Image (cartoon, rainbow, N blue to C red; front, side, top):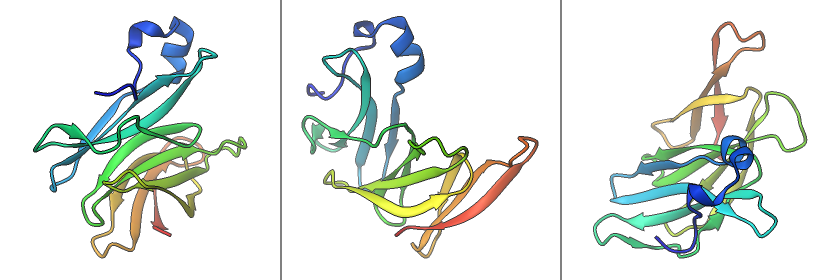
Length: 151
């Protein structure tokens, strides 16, 4: 892989424990998305996504694409042919999740739609109009499903 990512050994234990995750998902078109940490000069981590053509094992987004703050989780949207990233509300609104899509060419689109629950799962609607999102209900005792449009 290119210089988009930083090896885990280059993070201090606090940043590594609280600030970095790795995700890999693939689409039927043989495009895979890899989300991993990139260490900034100040020692903090940001997440970047890079798209890999599985047939040729080449990156289509050298250097990666920076993701929104507080990003967590990555899903393949087979219906629309892109990738979906969740991010926790950076303003601190408890339980609000923002969504962004990343095309197989690496174009990041922040969606206007949000989910009122902190997401733990996502399934694309078969008609391509949005997603069914899943998360814990407000008291944490059950799971709630919320439809979210992909606009």
